[in-house]
Amino acid sequence: MTLADVLNEFRANVAQCDILIANAHQTDATGHALLPLLDRKQITVAAFLNLFIAWETFLEFSLTRLMMGDATLSGRSPVRYVSPASPEAARSLVIGVNRYFDYGNHDYFKKMVNMYFQGGYPYEPHLSSIIMDLADIRTMRNASAHITSTTQTALESLAIRVLSHPSPNIDLYAFLTTVDPRSATGDTAFLAYKDRLRTAAELIVEG
Image (cartoon, rainbow, N blue to C red):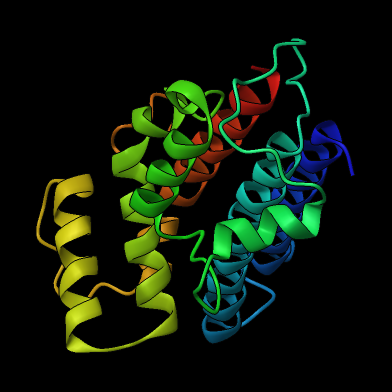
């Protein structure tokens, strides 16, 4: 799999998330939803989780290719401080003595790329430019996977900051489907965060 293949797979996975949400919110001729609310909620949250997994997969496979010496689409190669002999060796190097590496922990990932590539290129400055968005996405992921008072409080704090008003007991579905007031085109929170991830991925691979 080339670096271009990694990007194309990410784009395809992102498009599938859009399709899932669109299908979940289809209406009949009278404008009534075809699916009950519970189904719409579960499908939308599942689509968000798929987006998060697609982003983690993009980070893992792009990192492997760049560690192996691939150039970006612009033809520029990062200055590497590592030179693994195979993709498997590259993954082992990332994992180290741990059982796995958490690609969803963006602080760890940023430290990793700065250790392996001069200036963190091509991930930087693009990761740093969306670091708050990445933290938000992790907060949403945690809210979808673990329903606790801690994750609920974090989600409500996120909603206050983004929506600019208190949203007690808001669930992830409601947040994802609410219009993001920061969007100039009236996108939902899901669409806004999705577009930031896709843009970052494209900038990283294009170099």
